[in-house]
Length: 264
Image 1 (cartoon, one colour):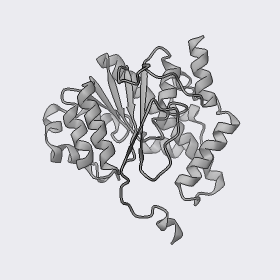
Image 2: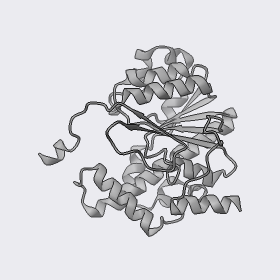
Image 3: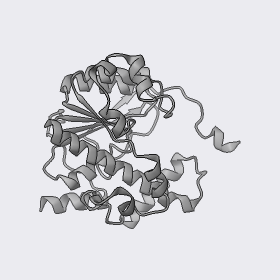
């Protein structure tokens, strides 16, 4: 029955019950959302990691093979770690914002959940079931999304890309999001199995959504897992939606208009 309820939450977009009644960080897996270029969000993530002392940290930004090679000696040096991760080349914001999370997670094992580029390319034209692999069913990828959720996700993708994407690309972009959510959930489960937890997942707010993001996928795959999801918003902007256990707000980061490039 619990598995059926979680499936309904995943497919319809309902919030999964909170990990604990008081909203504390007592969970097997904690998804700590962020806006990638906001330093206050990363400072809060580091504070939570220091408090939780997770056995494992799963990173949206790091590939699995690279994470396997992260020794304590590499993690000890910010410069060596940044170079090892090819951080700047992969297009992520200033690594100095993220490094305190690594320091706070001293002794934790690091896992990479970045979706390989080849799988992302395939996701534009193939169903997630065909791209993810043999255990795609475990993460709900054998089922199409409800029509209303598909439409809502496509609308979010269009807005995120400044209304510049052709409509016929939107379904493919949603496929890629589903693949990334499933990869985050699968790696979080792997980390939980290897280390016993708790596991912290560092990812964007969109993937940390408890109604239809990686936490919902993980709950579908392992209904008994205790899951916590944090969203982080910015002052003066809309509060992130997604059935989160907790939402925090920080001062907004000054940034250039992200849509300016699309208007050239």
